[in-house]
Amino acid sequence: MWELSATEAEAIGLSLKVALWAVLVSLPLGIFAAWLLARRRFYGHALLNGIIHLPLVLPPVVLGYLLLVLLGRQGMLGAFLFDSFGITVAFTWKGAAIASGVMAFPLLVRAIRLSYENVDPRLEAAARTLGAGRIRVFRTITLPLIAPGILAGGILAFARSLGEFGATITFVSNIPGETRTLPLAIFSQVQTPGGEDAAIRLVVISAAIALTALIASEFLARRVNWGQGG
Amino acid sequence: MLQLDIRHQAGDFVLDAAFETESGSITAIFGQSGAGKTTLINMIAGLTKPSQGYIISDGHTLFHSEQGIDVPAERRRIGYVFQEGRLFPHMDVRRNLLYGYRKNAVLDFAQITDLLDLGPMLQRRPGSLSGGERQRVAIGRALLSNPNLLLMDEPLASIDAQRRGEILPFIERLRDELRVTILYVSHAVEEVIRLADTMVILSAGQVAAVGEVEELMSRLDLFPLTGRFEAGAVLAATCQGYDAEYGLAELAFAGGTLRVAGAEQAIGTEVRVHIRARDVSLMLGRPEMTSVLNVFEGTVEIAETGSPQVDVLIDIGSPLIARITRKSMHDLNIRPGVKLHALVKAVAIDRRSLTGGAARERPQD
Image (cartoon, rainbow over all chains, first blue to last red; front, side, top):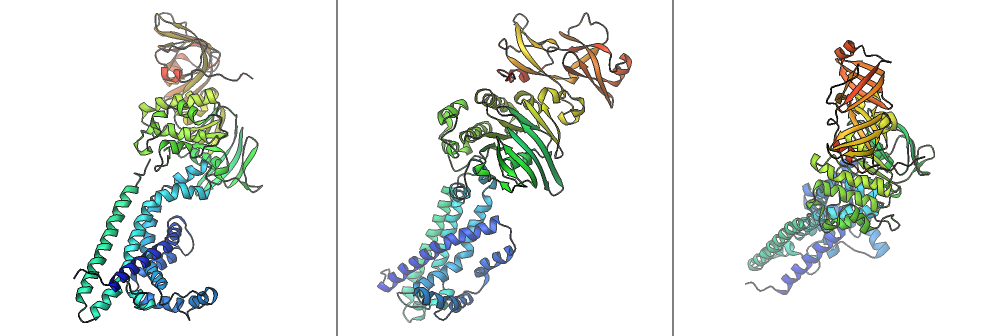
């Protein structure tokens, strides 16, 4: 019963691809948002913080529907993307990556923001007195010091993306080979008479991937921790 | 030369400072905690923006509110040694030292590591260094960026008292061998006397006095600011001999010869002697059978009455200050113009305050 069928293997591969892209694309945005929230005081700070954290408390179906309205072929942004660049995201794996990325975004931002808050701004000031401009300070001081947070946040977001279900099925549906990721494949198998064995296989694999990611995150975070405070 | 005139307001605190410093010397910014010392040098470094005024270093305008000039910190060429070192924890000592390296540095990497004795720790991370080692790395790092001016914000404050003595000689070498222009922030009188040539006394955000260390330390009116307990005259002296039989150094100064127990120095060495007011006693007649080795004849200039104690400024060829009780003042009828003898015990003078002033060559101009 532990033989994977071709469609199951496909679902696993697709899930990894979607999660990877979701994290890669949201990482720069997440670093920027975390910097805004940790280091800047501006009008609308609380509002931005609230919006970023919304996916944590909003039903995923609601978010998926919002994405469909916004990014569907007839949607405000979606129509623009299609007309200008010929890009369609609704009902494609790219859309699945967007849905996963949005859902995982708060976890990513929280982890990076925490590490920003642990970076002593006085170290950055010291680097400036040594002749480093803002970009060099960020590249050589800030970024290496928040690296553990970026790693931890990235892996957490990756694991979260693997499990995304509600927003994905609402936004990009459940198309085999295109948007049927692991959770959707499990859902489909459970709905199919005689699909229990396949469902259990996929459940075990999901759990294994998620657990591996979490352990890797812990391990890496500890390795990259510089023993700050010198 | 650094010239500045700045005003800065942060909440209730107002800082208002104007002074100039000489190149190639150490100027101490002296004041109690909260006087505005760190705020002042942060503004010179470009880390805090003054409300108004100007800062000019060697003819380069770094900040001028009216001309709209505010050179960013990274382009000011001002080195900064922070109280807590602020070494980059993710880099080893070598990478910390080279972070701000500028090629045309007067001294190269090997010379700086040699001068500050950093060789054995180049591969180590800051986390594994002692407080004193960290400060030496911080000093080296700032020097290697080839600054026009070096700011030091209480670099010894985070180091335990025993280790401080290990850092002071290194700072003296910057002064004597490299002739680095340094602004040295401190609230410790002994550090100022040992290191600085001139001092700026800050009090509650205002400049209370600017001048030579000897002059300001001997001013009675500044005693509340220079610290009552340690207060006393500071004399510039030259070592002219050493009595090996009794272990006494003979130091010539404007008022005669001062003998100090156990402070051997090379002949001709210029030193600075801090004679605390509470170690000086006064006598009207000629002292005859006394154990006190240093007796100076002088005239009372000012007798400042406060509480049960009186600080008496005596001219013995250079200013000397004695702290006596008000009762003694009345009994001896001490008032300006009175001639008397001042007695300084040879053992009362802190030898450590002497050794530090060694090898000081003052430009004669």
